[in-house]
Length: 121
Image (cartoon, rainbow, N blue to C red; front, side, top):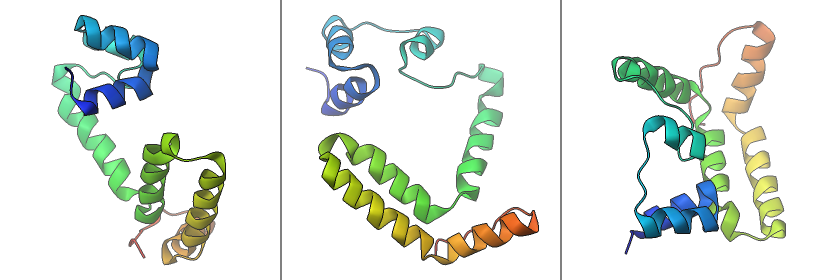
């Protein structure tokens, strides 16, 4: 039996029917096939992997931590919530973000045409 993480993640990525086929047959994929199947969103050549990974990490680290946290929670929990619960979560997350010092910093940075420096506050 495949792990719960494999079952859940594959079902969310490719849908239950395709996930069932992949998990029951033990099908494996090359990097290019995984990209085509929607199992990954990016492929890098081995020589480029460190650079691509570092660029992604830097971009994520420069982003607004509060909004990032809410985005991750929203995506991870979206299939477990009703539409009403999603709207409630959205209202809470948006309000919290708009009241944060990071939001103020983002607006000021935009107006000053500079990169924002987020603090997670």
